[in-house]
Length: 154
Image (cartoon, rainbow, N blue to C red; front, side, top):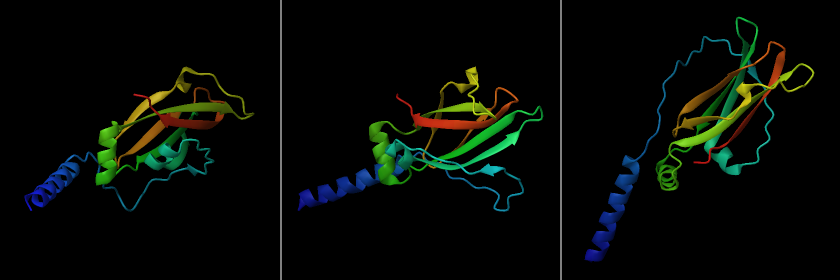
């Protein structure tokens, strides 16, 4: 009988530790948006199923700077929330989650523009957090872009 009590007490202790170890973000925002976003449709080519399950791509917005350069912003959200996802992320060292991203810019005729801004960047995103990845075109003749995402190797 004491083995059953010990097992039950151990299970309660493990669950308490798991729920106490969560490192997540809660958000509150204006429900009545007043901003005018220029959201664009995207085409996705996904080769990493694990990344797709962890990171939700919420949308892409574009605008122009006052100087006439194109600006792009991608909103991503870490979907790894909940007790079991948090426990697994803690065991595997994926909390906070690290990603790498790169913006590549193109002219109106589809030619890639070489720039130091096209290097891979690292970002850290904790469970439940939304993150905005941004880039400004290196040239006023850039009219299109591509964003690449991958998991960062620790």
